[in-house]
Image 1 (tube, rainbow, N blue to C red):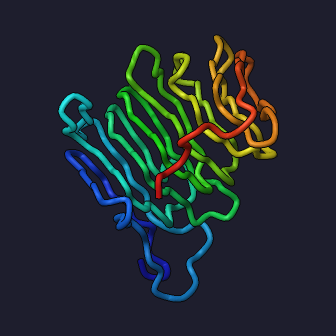
Image 2 (cartoon, rainbow, N blue to C red):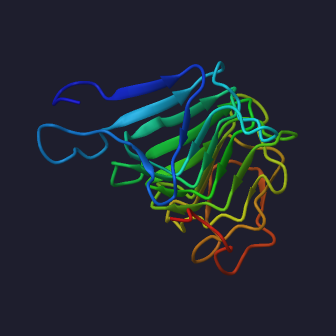
Amino acid sequence: FEDGAPDREISIHGLLRIEAAPGAPARLTAHYVEGPFPDGRGFSMRFYDESADYDPGDGSGTLIRNCYIENLRQGDGAISLKNCSPRFYNCRISSSKSTGGSYFSIKSGGAPTIENCYIYRVVLKIWADLRGTEALIARNTCRDGYYSLYFYGPMGPQMIDPGQVAYNDFDGTANGLYLYRVDEGEIPLGNNYWHGGLPGIVGGAATVDFAPSLTEPPADCGPTW
């Protein structure tokens, strides 16, 4: 994008499929033509209701495997999922924002999978009720996000089932785990590694169950390349 132009958005209303070999990953990125890349500028990706859901039975649907997704912009919707179930597998996902103020937001419905990814300067933000679905956030390495993990609850009850967010290596950020108006229920976050101790809890009044908390990063965590 050119200097002064608004940051760009990729809007997916159907099928997006990117499959590359681990030794030759694909790349989705933004380039700045006027000099060094500005802090916090970049592009965003939004997957809407019409996005083709990934089907683990036959491997069809929206799948991004072995891909760099880099120079995401700062803000809430660096990557945004709404009522759809894409799969991100074996990817390296990063923001240009030095403070980690970019968000990978699961906004409503669906059963997305985020597995074996390296997530840098991007916060996973859950503001959907994922209970009873096949949603899975597992075996990811998360570093330098503004929060370790963000739960957003003003639209009504939103929670996860045990095992839906598990076997991840979360960054031990000073800002901790953020609960925005999540005031009821229990959030089961067992079998994750918190990289230097359990995170502090900011906001909310829900109970967070960290047990069992892993004492070392789980095996096979992050991408294979």
